[in-house]
Every structure is written in structure tokens, then in C-alpha cells.
Image (tube, rainbow, N blue to C red; front, top):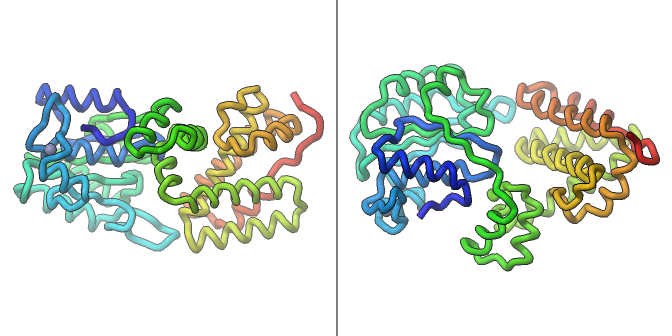
Length: 342
Ligand SMILES: [Zn+2]
């Protein structure tokens, strides 16, 4: 079986390629965060090593499949944050060391399986030097080796890298797919599955983490509450909040970025609410407050602020001063202009 949730098109592509003996030696799995790119990469690794492939599908039961799924197969390596990533919170990248290791191992015969598979998570974090080194391996692919680059920001990869990989796109899951998966694969009760499907907006990975870690839900709620209180707040409170966020950024960069992403969902929800599409909002618990506030902002104010958040996120990636950019962002939070605007 394929463990990835949904993604029929991507799965069909890999199945057919396998059956026709036309799998590529290099793949780039692209798509929004948390839609299953990592899961599909491991599915492909199982397909390449499974001892009992049937109908272009790994069996999920042989010792190869089981060891890959459990993360302890000697020929399947995942390179991502935490492995081979150099630098502190200000400078995160996959460095040349990790790629050199891959290049040297790629030429060895597999130890225990039929194929060596190297999976680069967040491949957009490859440093330029590392990407250029990887290019050499992509240009002269060793036999029995497959490279899988996983990214949600493919435009940040070198064009020369992109052109040497076969691109497979993953999409946001539909609400029905999410509910179905949670019910079948995780035995989640219908009502809870529907609630998570509402909240995750097609990102099954988010729903699964929320299921496994209720803190994620709590963080989301507290971020939304912070945002809403700031809308009515004065300059001093906004400065204070920017300081808190900057401190969080230095302590736990990922959490601070997630906080801004949560803010983004709220503004997007506000836009949907204004357009009468309340049932599509991410943050269903906030539907009433979105209805109440929706009329106070113009579409222009909302899109401008969505762009301001996106600019801030891009700035943080480029290592601008977090405190200064977060202050600019919180100070630019638009105030509701009163009755419904055009
Ligand atoms: Zn198998």
C-alpha cells in the first residue's frame, strides 16, 4: 500500500513509471507544506526496495518495507534539518558536508536493499555550494541510486538542479479525502475528523500533528487570540507584542514563523468571510468573531496586510533584523474602519 494520504495523481504517476520501468534516478516532490511529500518520498523508497511489489505498489509487509517505514534501513537516508544543517538560528542551510557524504555513498553498492535512496527534506535549504556539489551527482547518476528532493519552495532551487529532476506535484487534500484518511488510517471519530479537516485546510500533516500533539492546537488558539487583541491595541501594546515575537524567534525560530502563518490564516479567513464563504475558513472556532469583524475592513486593507505578513516571512528567511521587521508588521496591523467597506 501507499502510505501517503490522497495524492492519487502523484501516486499514479509513480506506479505507472515503475510498471513501465521508467522511474527516474532523481525526483523533485513539490507542493504546499504538510501535504505528504515526505510520506510519498518514503513510499517511493519502499517501492524501489520492496521484495513483493504488486500492481506497482509496495507491499508494506516485507522486511524491506518495514525497515524503511521504521526509519532504520541502511540504504535509505533522509537528509534534513538536524542532519547536515550548518549554522545557528540565523543561518539554516544544508551544507556541503551532507552532500559530500551522499556523493561518496551513492557510488557504493546498496548494503541491504536493491536501491540506495537519498531524500533531501526542505531541499530549498541547500547552500549554493552544496547544490553545486549535488549537481555533479545528478549529472552522472550512479546505478542503483535515487535522489529525492522535497520542497515547498521550488523556485528557491537552482534551475540546473530543477531541470535534472522529474517533478511530481502534490496538492492540498480535499475535505473528504482528509476526513476519509483520518477515519480509516487513524480511526478518528467522524465528528473529530471533520473538525480537523476544517482546521487543517488540506494539510494532512497538520491534522496528524494536531491529533498527536494538542499543544499545536493550543498554540494556534493563543496566536489567534494575540492577533485579535492587537487589532484593538495601541502602539505600546503592539511594540510589546513585537518584542515577544522577536524573542520567540530567537528562541524557537520555527514557532515564530508558525505564529505568523497562523496570522495569515486569520486574514485569509476574514477575506473569505467577507465574500460569504464562511464555511471555507480555516479557523472554524472563530467564525463568529470573523463575521463580526469582517465588515470593518476593506478588501484592500486585508490584501495589503496579507502581503505585509508574506513580506515579513520572506524578510525573516533572508535574515533581516527580526525585531525591526516584526515591529513594522505589528504597527501596520490595520484598524477596522467601522461599517462595511467596499
Ligand atoms: Zn515490501
